Amino acid sequence: MKRLDILTSLQAVGYRWLVRDEGTQNISNSLTAYEQKPTRNELGCWSDLGYKFVEEDQCFPDVQGDVLLDINQEVWRLTELLPIRKHLTKVLVDNKAIYVTRDIDDNLFAWKQEPYKDEYEGEWVVDSDCLGHEVCECIPHYLSDVFRDVQWCSHKPLLIFDEGRPLDKNKWINEVPINSRVYVSYFPDVTTAVKGHYAGFDALNPTEHFMTYKAGTSEWTSKDEKGHTHWKYCWLAEEVDESEL
Image 1 (tube, helix red, strand yellow):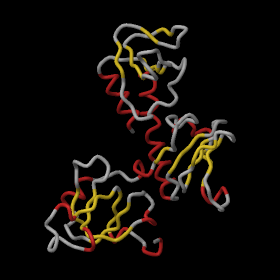
Image 2 (cartoon, one colour):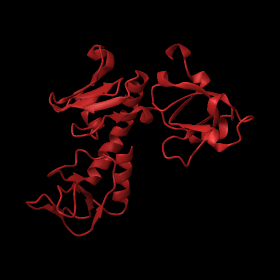
Image 3 (cartoon, rainbow, N blue to C red):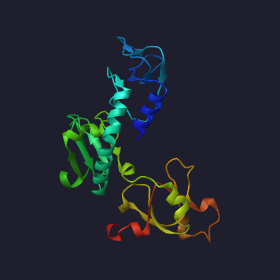
Image 4 (cartoon, rainbow, N blue to C red):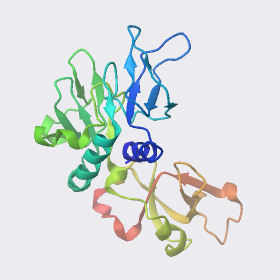
C-alpha cells in the first residue's frame, strides 16, 4: 500500500504531521510533512520548522483544508487494518469487483466495471443497462476506515486488482519458460485478454512488464526486441477458464 510506505518512510526520519497547503503564489496544493505540530494561517498555509514536501499520487485525498494527519496514529491504523484490507480485497477481486469508490454521503462501493463520478448526483455511476447489484456492491460502514484512502474528492476510483493479485516477479523471471502460452491484456479483466507466446519480463518498464512475441512469432522466429509487445497483465494458459473469454 503506497500510502503506508510513504508514511513509514517519513516516520523513520522523524516526521510526525502531514498537511496540505491550499496554496499561495509560489506553493499550490503541496503535501508537506512536519517534525513538530504546525499552525495554519488565514491564507490556508501551514508553517513550522523542520518540514519536507512530499511527492504523492493521490494517496492522501483525505488530507485537505484544516486536516492535520498524525503520522504515528495513521501508521498504527493502517498496520492494524491491513490484514482486514487484504482479506476484503481478495473477496472483492474473487467476485470480480475491482474498483472501489466513496460517494459524497460517505458510502463505499466496489464495482465490476470502472465507474465515473457524477458530480450533480454526488455518486459514482456506470453507463450500463445492468441493475445496480449486478455491477457493484456496497461495502458496510463499519469497514469504512479500511479504505480511508478512497474519498469522494478522489479523481478516479481505486483499482484494487493489483492489491488482490500481488506480482510474483521471481515466477515470471525465473520459472515461466520463454514461449509459454499466455493470455495478456492492458486491463485487469481477463475477459479482455488475448493469446500470445511469452517473451519475457521487462523489470525496467514501470507498468507494462510482460512481453509477448508479435504476430504469433516465437523465440525461434523473432530475435529482434522490436518484435515484442508489452502488456500490463498476464495469465498462464492453465490459469484461465476459456469459457470466460
